[in-house]
Length: 195
Image 1: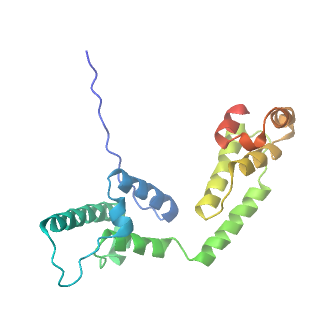
Image 2 (image 1 turned 180 degrees about the vertical axis):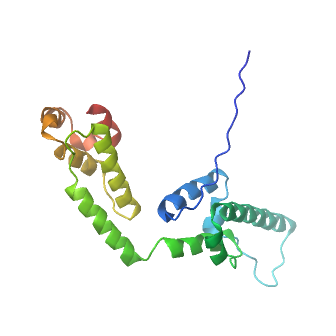
Image 3 (image 1 turned 45 degrees about the horizontal axis):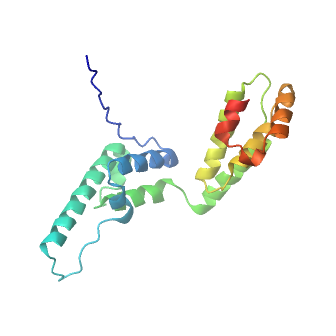
């Protein structure tokens, strides 16, 4: 008997106040629906008095429909209080840009957050009794927050940080990895499985 394959539609990511996380999920969601290009670039209206041929009219109407669908997804993703602040926006691009401006924060605030994450990364140490998986997850969480805020942190930097921040009971494993592997060629994906 053949089994049926069912496809579950992904839920629209709801805005929960954490803009960076939501925008990443929402962008991916809109890309999967093939609407991201409309949100990113907008819909260019023809110049006043411009005469469009039939195919141009059809293409423009298709873009406007995609924009309307993307706008609908954004409306469903945003809570009522936030939605009320952007009701005057006519396009999905205007809504996206408004959300970004309002919630992403200014450059100075992002630099301050990045400095905080850098300090947290630099002082990070494995706790006594902490599993390698938990320490790896904590390190990657901080590294990913740094990346979101504009830091270009390489995998080798993360691997080196993890290796030098392990508790003493892992010294023989760390030494073995450092002696037998080219640290530059290790990625964070490989590192997790080796310890």
